[in-house]
Length: 252
Figure 1 (cartoon, rainbow, N blue to C red):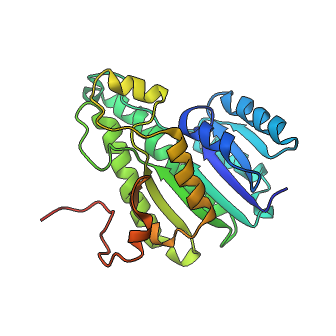
Figure 2: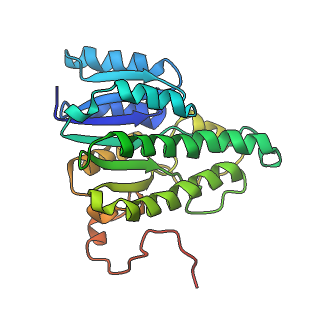
């Protein structure tokens, strides 16, 4: 068993799956998704490495009681370092979803409350100073308005502000929590987005993985509470004196 583990949600497909399949043997993995895809991905990873590097947890993160119960069964505190990468998300179901109250509720349950639930459980259940980094994928809907997918945009904006608040609240626990904007990635979600909105620029899964891998293996104290794009100059943050740099703020 490795001394470090990475917990990845939405690990059955897209960004979460790509990260899981490409992390080296430095880290053990706990893959979480609501479908059985995470089980398949986990078996594939273990077969490649020839040992049990990965475990899978099929669980709907909207079910707070279920995820808390499953967490109690996990021997996470045997690890020296625990990191979490939150990838699970959906966009608005259809063009006029914003007029449907239930669509707002469902999307917030998946994109916002499921993430907050897992973060809170991890903070409560994992021993002090073992939980090192929490990376939350926010998407472009947080940094700019997104008229074609207003519910998605609202959930991601709420996540980014929560990341900022949690960074302040738990700074004494030596926990780094930050949001990542990956750019437009060729996933199933992007195909749906392209039917209703124009995509100006794109990133590759390889670029996303390279950024996440760097963050896992290096000091990210300067990213705490911030929203950072995978192409941002991270080294510049060390010299930046503006405390609001890379944060949600009103421009005056």
